[in-house]
Image (cartoon, rainbow, N blue to C red; front, top):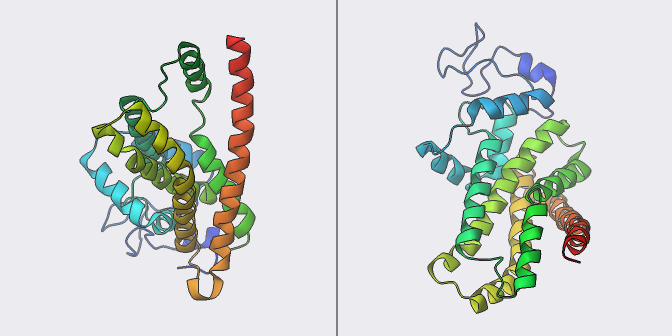
Length: 256
């Protein structure tokens, strides 16, 4: 592992996926092209090149990320891209599954006609709400860890995407029991409970991801990922508050 990420690290004639020596632009052992440092265009290009749905390997890749989000993100950023699934591919899959689970459990349903209409409008205006978690992780990592290891903004974004994927998986797991038995009363109780415990779950995921990605010695610098997790919680709460106010104003204008 390099002490700090730099362009020179990627210029070395070494495959950053498997570690073999490179004589050409492609690794003779694993076949990956010579890795280069990620930039703004690379993330978008690789995402669209690799979006193929319902692969059997997607589930296994997701499980690996759930267990080691920060390590997978670090490996990906440092060049081991053939070994790992693109973060945007995993994130999109998780969003689709979460939306299906929410729909199946009637999590946003209401017996009140006016309220149901308002909720429908909220759903329409909230299509981008899933991105707030990524923004919160990204802002927390850049604020708390900006000078650690020399990672650039796109590399922080890769970490945020993998981390938010795990957060979405946690949300799916939290909702899963309602797939088997869902009543308006159970949904109401779940909303009340999950509003509390999911904050701690998400903070724990962010703490783990930051610790792994930035190779933090937990015995000496535990406070740094803890500060990052706290920053994430505060930033996400602020973003959700602002977003909710904006959506409520739009909805009230529609139904008023």
